[in-house]
View 1 (spheres, one colour):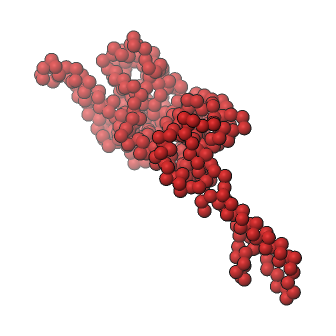
View 2 (cartoon, rainbow, N blue to C red):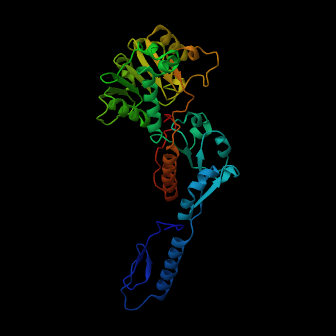
Length: 367
């Protein structure tokens, strides 16, 4: 019932009148007029409470997003959208956007109860102690960013296994100068996916479609999946690294995962492994990666993220022929806004109707 308070149940009497839930009807042949009067007044009060408009729930977001969801605001009388471009932060109960400026909404006496992040990674939000330690619910964009990021990860890999970068550079020298470049097929190779969440699982599915055997690590208990041969816990990472021809980093950035791929981990990898990072730059010790690339331990690295980000113009990674770097664009897609609006629409409706939200982040764990 739009704009009405629910949960104050009323029941019908056999005589066609109304009584409060749990009320009784007297069977005495002599009516108690005072009781009838009280019952009538109470029934009218219950009906009035049930019909009274509920206070509007205010969700603040960029104006362009609000325009795409205008029908939601019309459908739910209890919803009100305000633009983050011009709003009193203390009025916002829900907030949609990135972590920049979030502190402004965490005001004493404010109404903020929910934040929807535009991205899967939420480390920027969780650096804000007032948010991390509050009761404000944080939800993210995990899973909906999986398709395009997984495509990007496989694209970075194919760039090396099919030598696309080298071909592109040599073609102007003549058609025949490129014939000797090595070409690797993925079928029969083993891929290790570190982090089997919404993005990692999509990478696993694509790798399996190429005929690869997929193994993975994840701290959660992951249900069996036809595309994944084995999922180990994080403490099994060292054992699994030595089995992989390709290593994909797909873990969120948390205090636990920061620097988890360093000199020791590269040492344990197969000689000539391919390393692909589409998660966060701080997962990897950049100096250790440079050394592993220089020694040939890592045959090639495809990086959509780096540490620092962006890299200094004189950084060694820029000059390495076995490295391809893209500027943190794996999440860009012609369909991401469609999926983002679908998730946002669902969560706003859930927020308006008091149902559990999707993609709730454990703020203490970091994802």
